[in-house]
Image 1 (cartoon, one colour):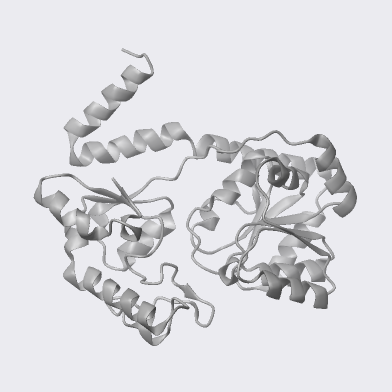
Image 2 (cartoon, rainbow, N blue to C red; image 1 turned 30 degrees about the horizontal axis):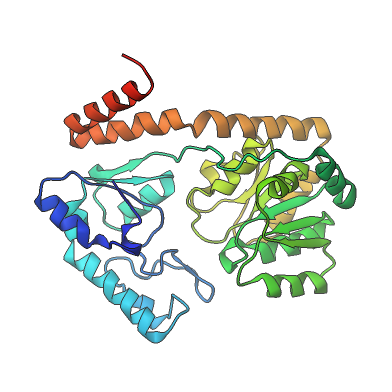
Length: 335
């Protein structure tokens, strides 16, 4: 089962595995196999699928990796070899995507439907440090009902649009995280009428205090997001989420039920979502937060992931699936 092997081992390990009769499952954590720059997005071009159909040279001509000319050339060449060689698509038995969108996108770009499967990631927080109620109370006293963004401060996350929408609606915005756009976003906030507070990188109990004190979490991405864990982390803490109708985000947020959905790259649509949220009373917000929490904890479960992944293994090797099931049953002390 391969996860991101192109970073270190490279996809070169797949062919010898196939030659030795080893069944292969490959999880799609990004778009690298069909977009040399990983994201189908550049700040200059926005959402971009120019490499479709084996035209990976676009990574070089449009300088998509923001690196050196040599790096862009290397990424483009690697993409061309992977695509036109076809060995990867032939060697792998099943490709697993954590959202329906990525599965559909790989099918659109020529991957065989019979090899593609959708299995959502399961959610378990690796950091459940207890939150200090006094810190939550202090944050609410300082910012009132505020919107929270937490994540990488890069162009594709749409934080610039969120600042504009916050300025238009008057809602306070707290931005947790760091990244290449932080200085630019801070300068934008100073020029605007928005009430924006940047905390820098936070983790553990301090991060969760900011989440629990917030009215809602926002992720107004402008690229094909896949299945961001930050949404599940906010939902599991009973927070509505404002997201955009792009990539896998609409699969995680139901408009008017667990949060609100705005059109991507659309300030007016995002501002409308903020207004809808601001108009809700505390009882309605709590009800929406509970619906979000229920979805995170009942849909994105370890049990579902295990069951469906073993089902994929069983499709390609019943013997392996049976062995895995027996091993886990023994570990759990079951007959």
